[in-house]
Length: 295
Ligand code: PEP
Ligand code: MG
Image (tube, rainbow, N blue to C red; front, side, top):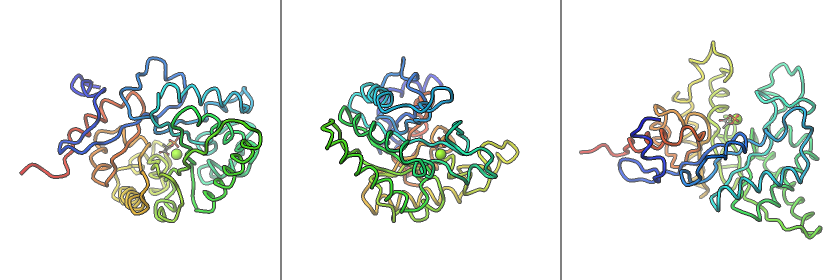
């Protein structure tokens, strides 16, 4: 980030006309926490838990997951931490878990669809998250949610995990349960999901809206989060969140692009989450935004 942007790193983000905007960080691996000062962010908007499931290590057991989740909550020191349940499949294959040779992996058994297909794997993760939630402000977020029945199924699973932990006398808490909005069907019907919060995944939402894969360079010009069609879905999600009285944020790469930040704020977002490297430049882009141009 430039020197001017760098001066904003540890200040709360605010637009040119004085509206506060929360800026969180995305984490792909707890190793990123070394040398990262939590004072520069309002919390963790996305923990990509796939790192726990990387090849060669086997599936992580409850104790291993609990230790990592606690470490991240301790780092955050009371700030909210949004843990995304396993988002395997699509661009994130996990040997031994995801299906090889799907004709269309982005449209296949990925994200929450996979977790619901492997309830033992999902329950283990939910147990570890409920136990970790005692130690801080943990939230649980489901990836690739498409229809309300999937959220309902996950909520039933969370309730049963909470009941089991209570019966076992293990300290636990039921964290808020939110959804990623990254499938157009979810954005278009956002108000029909009984989610405790929404977080827009602009990477996937863009590829599914524009029918242009996020990992194919030849169609990168179409895979544009600033497209009017994508921004309409963002605005619709913001409106649904306001109507339901729940929080909405955005944790895709669009929030780290200074050219797109004004469009996202214009669509009504007041909470973003970006990779640690982008915090200062996103705050600078926010500082340059004004809803009411000066007279
Ligand atoms: C997204 O899709 O925008 C997102 C944040 O999740 P991921 O990039 O991990 O799919
Ligand atoms: Mg995604």
